Length: 439
View 1 (cartoon, rainbow, N blue to C red):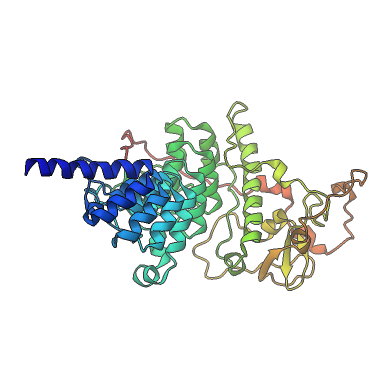
View 2: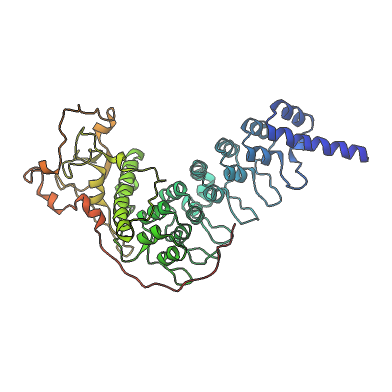
């Protein structure tokens, strides 16, 4: 009996070794010989072969195991599924295969009360995050939870995926979640500092990119946590001078994404990317002015991947409003074109007004037709615009003729006005000396 147990234990350990090293033929032979090996777990980690394959990214082995195992949601001792471990380690191919096999994205672990969405956000795997969110549009999830509820699901400490991504400085994940409907003003429950918004946590982590992203989606700089602190005070306490400068209540308000407008919500992906880049650039220019005023020595963050060069006009067809950027956005049905920056000047608002029952539809500056739909300009679609020869002189603001076009241009804010918006004010709350508990 003792010898038999020893041999059995040896075979089980062999399985985990060949799974981790990706020895496909050995895995197939062992799984076919003894099917119940797939449900056996390691002695200490309590991981099944599926958990090991998902965590180590052995996609071929994972496929073999899934073909022979009817339960893709086998649990370890913390009730973590293979999908959670794949999302934790950013193994996108394993995440995709597990979802195809019917893995349940709504399960919680017992370690932190988190789902696979929390894991992807916390560890900064935006591709896994996007894939899980796409799966949340499926019929079972839509009928049982609803997509909006899933995006804003809270873990055992009351933190949403957006809270975790903001605290961990995961700018790409913050962007994906906000674009998918994550609540930017949501407060935490018992997670670390109670009552913290994602903006509080981004200020604590010192992520300038996350702060910019959250502000652009309507985060409130004056919202207080349970200790009465606004995000500015959190940034000051942790000596994040650049974040504090942007969060200072007396600094100009940033432009915010006009998500309440129907034509913005129904934007095609290409037009949305152009407008989002323009919005980031406009707020970065505003931020640079603020940071220069605060201190010339404050370092600038460049990890967002957006630079001034990304928005230089190539002279294919300059915007007739600013004469600085190429026309990339077309207004339908009138067909007039303008750059993404001027489109935002028409459509963005400085601060969201939740009390307003309706939003005024912006008008095309050329024909005064109400803007109900925006698409990528035709010249952007057709070949991405050929470059003019170097001998072609570039038109500048000096060539602007006030008699050209519509007189409505006078009512539009100039591009430079992005950095000179209205100012707010607010009291500074008391400071809290608690330390962030590590998860």
